[in-house]
Length: 404
Ligand SMILES: [Mg+2]
Image 1 (cartoon, rainbow, N blue to C red):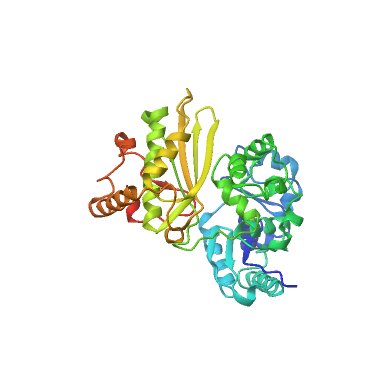
Image 2: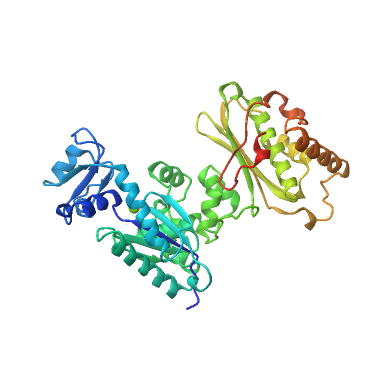
C-alpha cells in the first residue's frame, strides 16, 4: 500500500454533553441535553450520544425533547468549562502530533509529514491520539478521527463514523467513497445550499467532481465553490504565505452604489487593486472571473481566459467588455477572481501587453507604493475611492498595501 494521507482531523463526539458527563459521573451513559438555560421555551445546544439515539439533536425544542426522551437530563451549558476541556484536548493531541489548525471548539487538525503520511502510520497516530485524549482528559472524551489529503476530506471522513470513529479517505479513493454520496455530506452544504445545488442539477458529490472551474462557480454561485471543487479532487490548497494561486476580492455594495454604474466602479477598483498585487508578486494571470449578485438573488457570472497578463489597462478593458451594463436589476455584491497565476518572467511578451502600458503600470505602482495607494488611480472608479477597502476571500493574509 503506498496511499498517502496529509491531514488528520479530530472531532470530539457530542462535545458539550461529553464535558458534562465527564464532570458528573452520574450523567454517564444517560441521555443528556445541554441547553442555554433551564426552560421549556429554549432549544438543545448539544445532545449526548444516548439522547441522540432518541432523535434529539442540536435545535430540538426542550418541550419536544421531554416527550421524545422521558428522563432526559437537561444541563445549562457552561462555556468556561468547555474552553478548559478544549485546551486540555489540544495538549493531549500535541503530545502525539502537533495541532496545526484549531477549526472550532471541538475540531482540530494536524498536518502529517514524512513517514507519518503513510497510511498505516497515519492510522497508528490517529489511534494514539484517541487513546491519549481518553487517558489525559477523560473517559467521556471520545473522538471521531478523519484522515484525508486535505482538511475538507478529513472532515468528511470524521463525520462518516460517529461516535468513536476512525475513517481514512486517501486521495485515490475519494471518488469511489464520496462520489455516490449526497452533496450534503460536504461541510457547509445545509438545506438551502443543497436545494440550490439540486436545482442546478447537482445531486451527488460526483456531480461536483471533475467539472471545470467555470462550472464550479456556476454550481455554487460563489468563488467558494472553486475551493471546494479543488479539494474534492484531493488538492491540498492550504496555502503557505506567498504561494497564492489565485487572487479574489469581493465587496458588498453600500446602498448608494447599488446601481449598475456603482457596481461597475467597485469592480474596476477591485480589479485595479488586484492587478497591482499581481504585479507586486511578480506574477501574471491568465483568467479573470467577475460576478455581480443582485437583490433578487440572481447572479451574473462570467469568466474569460487570455494569454498571461498583469496589465491594468488590458484587464479594465476586459471588464468593460464583459460587464452587464444593460440591466435594471439592483446589484448588492460584486467580486473578481484572478486565476491562472504564473510567474511574470515565465512569459516573454504577451500579445496583449503593450510596452507603453507596462511602463505606466510600473510608474503607477512606484508612486502608489511611495505616496499611498490612492495617489494614482484609474478614472473608472474616481467616485468610489472611499469604498471597497478590499475584503479578501479565503486565501489572503492582509498586508499593509491592502489599506487601499
Ligand atoms: Mg463534534
